[in-house]
Image 1 (spheres, rainbow, N blue to C red):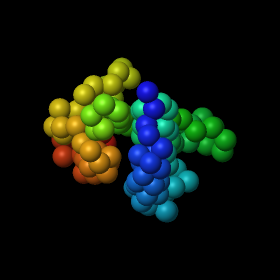
Image 2: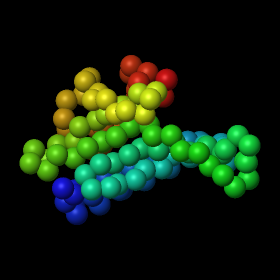
Image 3: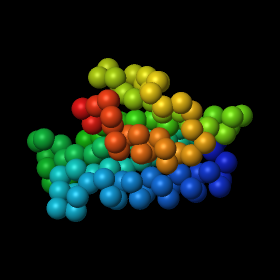
Image 4: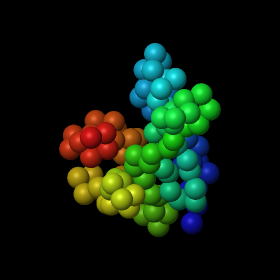
Length: 115
């Protein structure tokens, strides 16, 4: 199941804006925000230079997943455990607008996404 084209375009715009604004310009050589969209899953990714190869290698850490449910046309937010497993984020019900999930990640009221 894939995200409908209009929803995907909107998601890309929202995610690009978030990723470009989340990290201050002066540290973007040390940390970057990115995302991927595969089928109906959006993955928010933090990238940092590899500790032993700052010049060419970057590591990736998944911050959150947002999964689109086509029958209900809603987004569900998931956080990532230390072991890499995704866990339903219970404090935000399924949303019609992906931006609400992005805003919850950004605000991180429980310290779930950014520690």
